[in-house]
Image 1 (tube, rainbow, N blue to C red):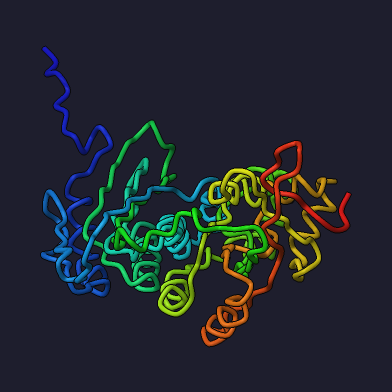
Image 2 (spheres, rainbow, N blue to C red):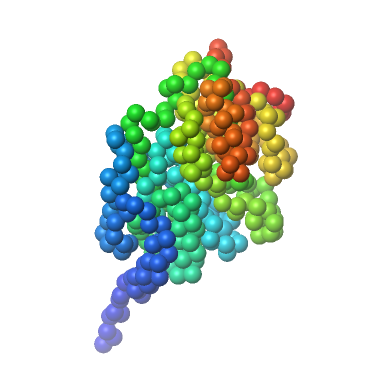
Length: 343
């Protein structure tokens, strides 16, 4: 009589020992993100952070979460996994800084079909670099091996950031007035949005070559620059130009009755965006609703503060431009009005 097959979790496709090895391998890497307030080490059930180390009088916790999206498709196609972790952190902390909050800590979620230690560790290197650039601690995360749900070594990422801001210093757009200026901060490229469209405009060969490398340039992290500005200049509003870009993101900070008047042509749009516009026969509005067009963050300041803000940004070697102004909303009620040439 045949004995029934003896099963283990590993035979089903989930190797717990490999997961434990991964945690052990990244301990030293994660320690590089330690900042005052971070307590303990990774590997427990929870991560700890002591907010009293921040010495904020009226503390308010701020949380964000995001992913990298289909940019991961290009990273996995090229076998280049050490930059998407930076994107993951950037997408979260850049949202956080829009409130004026200082990022405190970050947690990641790595889900895959089969855990490849080399791939996972390369992703983690990017996450650690992103956390260091943002000045926050990586205090924990989760690695989920889900065979059959994700084919082969395919993986997905999600991230979670928590920050702290003084209740009296929250940046929420309520002080924005007609005549205030919009300052655009240079992006590093396409960042992490619009990739479902981008992947349809370039061939597989292009994606595996020069264009793939261009598109994998990681999202710029603006935390240190914006925190420096907040100490010297009143920022009335901050918008992270991500999904929905100018058309959908900037309205989040504009008070009722006003609009953001964007002057197309007031900054140099990088060539890759122009190539995408040409290949896809995209309208100006579609471009400004899908891509950052070379501007990854928009700040709103009083006219008399704009020059000072740009001088501070220049010390960080951050390119910036006055890209428009706050105006009275048109009768149709648009919150973003594009001015300048465009089809």
